[in-house]
Picture: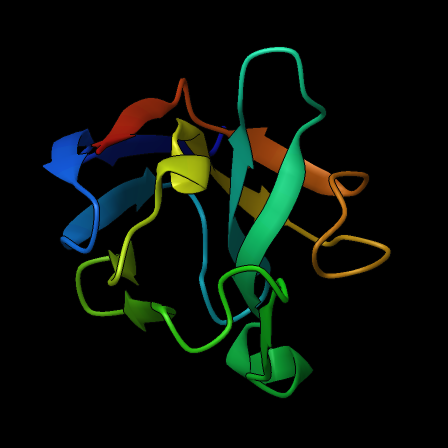
Length: 125
């Protein structure tokens, strides 16, 4: 049974940076897509960034709202997924979730089988 767990959230000022990590067990990063989603209070969960596993081409996807500011990456040797978040804005404040699976579309939730509990990111100022 695969599991994923996020870490690295916190409070940061506008313009600052954070790096989120997601450690996985029982999940082969080469065979699945791994991604980051976020959900702000009162809003729907949205896809932020995704990587397809090497077996599926290894392509990257970013939401327009984070393109050029966020970078998703994996360390397959440690089964860890990262999200480097730069130039953070107050509107990036949300609970961030790691997910792994075989989605119908990269930045949409259906098809992601494994979800973490989330890590809170708060951007002040």
